[in-house]
Amino acid sequence: MTERQLSIILAVVYEYIKTGEPAGSRTITKKYIKGLSPATIRNEMADLEEMGYFYQPHTSSGRLPTAKAYRVYVDSVTARARSRSSRGAEAWRRELMGRRSGIEDLLNYVTNLLSRLTNCVAVAAVSGLDSMEIWHIDLMPLGGTNVLALIVLKGGLVHHTEFTLPCEVEPGLLEELSRRINTIACEHSWSEVHDVLYQYVLGGLEEAETACRAAISDVDRFLTEQNYRFFSSGAKHILSLPHFQALSRLQAVLTLLEQEKPLASMVEQCRQASDLRVSLGDENETDGMQESAMILIPARACQQKAVLGLIGPLRMDYERSISVLEAVADALGDEAEEPGGRGRLRKEDALNAQEKK
Image 1 (tube, helix red, strand yellow):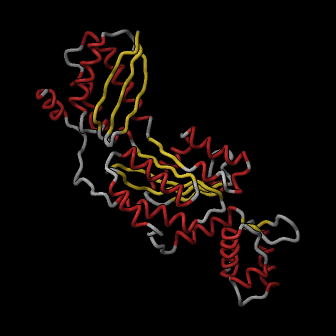
Image 2 (tube, one colour; image 1 turned 90 degrees about the vertical axis):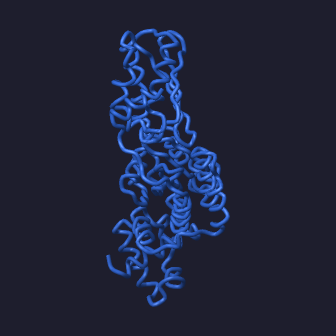
């Protein structure tokens, strides 16, 4: 690709994002590349169409960008320095800093804020439930062999799961097991303590060891498999966008938010890369999302690893959307972080905790 062709691609994409209309050669020469004739631009656009960057909705109309052209444009946007601030940023930055009621309230506010600022669907995910500090775990009988586990994590995140034990147990046993788990696990993450739980929680409960082991295993399975807690907002905003007047596109986004598993996969890729990720067109593997775009960025919320994101049409204002997303992520990161960190709970720590109860 030549420099001239790159300039034409960027101009056509920018023009379409701003106007929603196909870009013709005369428009490009008049507004963006003034040193070339419309005939020269027209020839180059025809070549770029053959290369898969443009398509022509009608023979007499200008060109529209394909996902391939959007990728060139987005790479250009992310490669250059951007202002990591946004209009009105100080007002909502102060609001963010003033929210101390827990991570759930904070991320609900953040997704509402992002959707209002961008007219996209905003998502947030707090990662690694097994790496979050445990505040409390309660095991409660539901009748017969059925048990409800109520799990409260740092920031006030409440999770619950139901499971079935291999045999019926007395309610008092579940209460005692809950007390012992909390003695070891409270103020630690599950990943820090699960290796020592069996040895130091089951002592003295040998008569119900099978049921107790099953209960701990079910809690372990839930916390390790439920890798993310998701928050979203803004479905009402995209209803007004022409792109989502096609019911199939709207359903694809709603299905993505509802099923969560494909979204979790994309969030995990972003978290591991520790950098901004933009998925366009066929880069989105979820059915029906091939004409949409997703922007994800790692963040921190209440000292927990999180990911923020936007879902919208291919014809998204990427420069503004990325700038807003980065500014909000930065504002979340401005929260005072706790110094240091804990490692895996040692066996002697667990024993000391048991002795203190």
